[in-house]
Image (cartoon, rainbow, N blue to C red; front, side, top):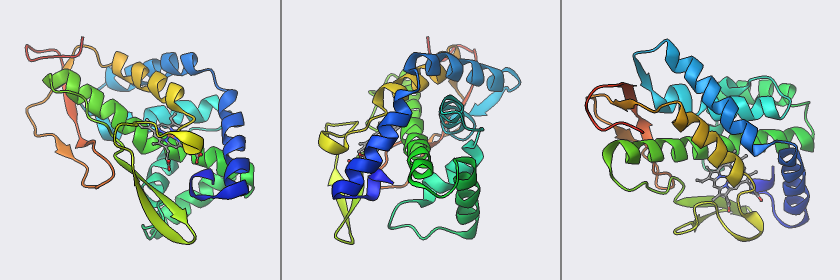
Length: 226
Ligand code: HEM
């Protein structure tokens, strides 16, 4: 996929991903993310936003908009394992095999689709988690993706993203509008929710700053999202 390719391979693979994304109307993503979130929280008193909404909803909505089945259950483990420094476990390998089949078989187009879904997964979850945490606590929202890893001449290189949340230059994120629309939809459906008394835990990664768990519940007198 584009993210870990260089030179002409990067240009060609990125163009495929950008073309796929161009078929998706960013505004309709917001409405769909709102409706899907609303349906999930309707039956729940307490919801862990990170596990139940912030990853599966944007990925599921984006997959559907790309004409794919809801593959979010397979994208989540693949997103956690696809970095060059992580050794994928058999469960992630099995999820990837299913994902390749769902995305049209082993070809660059399937890789482009998987790249879009995998890139959307943790980053959009971070956007949602950090914005919700900020809205519910009054603290400033933090940048979710602090650094990115690239593979250059077979070596893993870490590149700081300080001050550029969506990157810059020829590798800048092509999904920023889509990500913002998806996040706005999920957050819109959580109006009136507040943090539970439980502690918020944070992902332990030098490259990501986002909650690992963010449990919210309806109503009450504490500060809520409005
Ligand atoms: C719908 C959601 C999203 C999609 C479909 C998406 C898609 C992508 C793709 C395909 C790339 C690779 C571009 C390339 O290799 O040329 C990328 C890169 C990137 N994305 Fe996103 N993304 C999404 C959400 C986000 C969010 C929420 C953030 C940050 C808050 C983000 C930050 C970045 C950054 C920093 C890069 C550059 C990585 C690098 O320079 O190595 N993305 N994105």
